Length: 416
Image (cartoon, rainbow, N blue to C red; front, top):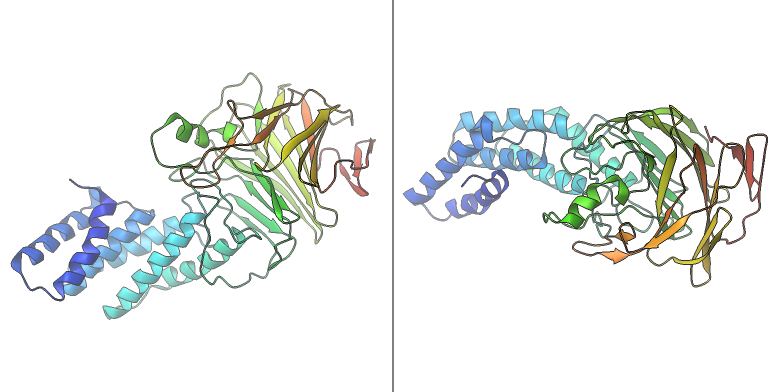
């Protein structure tokens, strides 16, 4: 039976064996593998499986002097790399942890090409090098990769990426990654998702955010559980497993693209506006992150007079301390984090629900792991300004004339 990945991976030990065993059955077997690998109908173009198919086909072509197979593999590999890794170095499979796998496989591919007396195409070497920056930006200050898409929260790159020049990087593939500074476990860190509709290893997480501050996870993604065909696996793909706004009374449209409409970069703060029509009307989210005094502010609204509701998934260690009057406080030991919600006129928005377990209150911190965690669900409102303040249960908040001040940090109520 043909399965693209097992056939390509099985080729590697068979090739190794062929260096020591000169038997007709082995040559015949590798020839069958090569014919399957060369079949364009069975090729996984623009995907990590395609890269493995090309490595296998080139290996057989070089081993037995079949230039036609080796040439095909080299040609396909260039095309696949251009689809799978964009010019900025972002992996297009919508799960950053796969960038580590792809980087490793491309190292193997380039080594094999050189051993086969072939020149490595510049497009492959350039994009492979750019992948290192993408992996670095997608790695949180604690050394683990941001668990976006089918990416486990326990993934450590375990490779030398170097230190990028920028603390904040926007990738056209649909990612914003930002931090206070490099090589500091206490650095704040955030991710924001947008871009092409869901494919390959992606989730329905557009407009979603994660937030890490003061040496700990604050806002978490629902995570990656497994590839098992279970109701929980499919739930982890859904918007409800991510920190996103939903449009009340409107039907969700899967695989909808979203765009980054506006940005504002400063040394101590950055702001971004994102929008899409995943619910049939314009859904807009503006995100501000301040690094002087750690805080994240998020403004959500929808067009056509529709109301929005949003979901905030906190780290499992953070337990509910109190809630009321548009304010929710969670804590772990002496550590506290506060969530505040207001509308665009500066009025407090109360009525938050906190769910631990149930339908929404779950996170997968590791492969095949499912853990209860607190999820704050907002009430429905025409607009929602959500402010996350780590490190305190009593932030000083004032709001008037469309301007908000939190612990001395001022910003517009609509953020951007």
